[in-house]
View 1 (cartoon, one colour):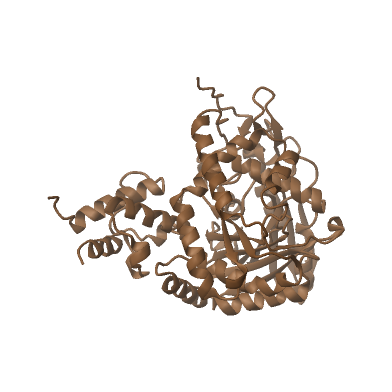
View 2: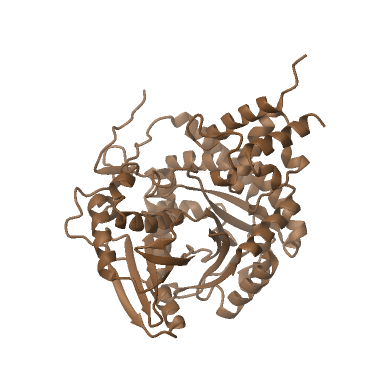
Length: 443
Length: 86
């Protein structure tokens, strides 16, 4: 017998991936006192009016009260869901404004680092803005987002939604945004079969001794820090061409991961649990190509994992065939979709239990580092609230363990690279060296 | 004996398979459609190559593929045709 609950306007059932992201939020909050937050910073030409932004945010809040929702659990079937308030009541999306002199770029950068390392308030705050206006007439707007509400691509799309709202297109777009999700309490046999696929994959892949960073003591008093690099459109194009020549087909992912392993290796050598294998957990965007608005909220991701023996980790040439083979095999086995289906089975677990179960296979080490590679930016507007939009960067807090990750995003033909690390997992000097090594191998 | 696939037949089938893969509406892809405009990242590209392997019996992952071959559905169909009829 099929048991399917009807759709509901005040609850949106979480998918298995939403549940997994919620578990990572729990893990990150337990370790560092702040949840699984990330930030996307938009650089603008001109001085942005806070009132203009507040007005638009109020319209979006009214149209999407789910922004102020929270996770709850169905008492009947134990499925977790997002409880959507009927209206936003008095809830606002907070916006803080700071004015700095023209030459205060470093101070501005530090403000954004502090912004993403500051916890959101309560269970129902999931977004927060920081606007820094510099004396030279430029502005930077940072959106801190709770990964339970938005993934990175969704956060970029949310910035675009703000601009579209200012142009009077909120209702047109909102009509196509999906805010409901069925409980998915059917097709258990299929999901169990997918679970077997995932278990087989995990057993084949999981090395017994993953090289992984040792988390520093007193994580709760530590913040995440970030190192950025940009590849110009020409450099990005050359790298994509090179990746294609190396792999035989123009696929970027194995080449980028191979270079990341080579760049990270010396930094992990002295500050990690010893082992014989690197294990890289990779998050991939799984939403269909033309569904930017439909899948604006919540998480539309899946995961892949790549392992590389220690002896190959110094050479891109040796790593590439190993990683390419693993990539193609995981796609043949349908690992990303199997993970989406199989994770539905786990949703009954509270986050605390889920976090303990997730650590079992790798003896708590999880992976050597996280890696993410976003497709072309969802923020495609030339302007934002009437000002020229000139740059977009991400500052993600990577859940510990391992508390370190590399993320590649793409903006107007540029590849933006960010290394994110919990203080103490890497020190600032070795993080800079990782980025130098990585950039020199990407261009 | 089965008739060899024409390049037009390959294009037609390729359009259908890409529509299914990317959950796009029927008729939304033509031979001129640029694959880059469809947001073809590494994940989707490998998925497409695996579909091509199943449907046409040719492994472009093994034989190789240039960026020019991925410019449009038409150029990809030409690469498949060339692989099937060397």
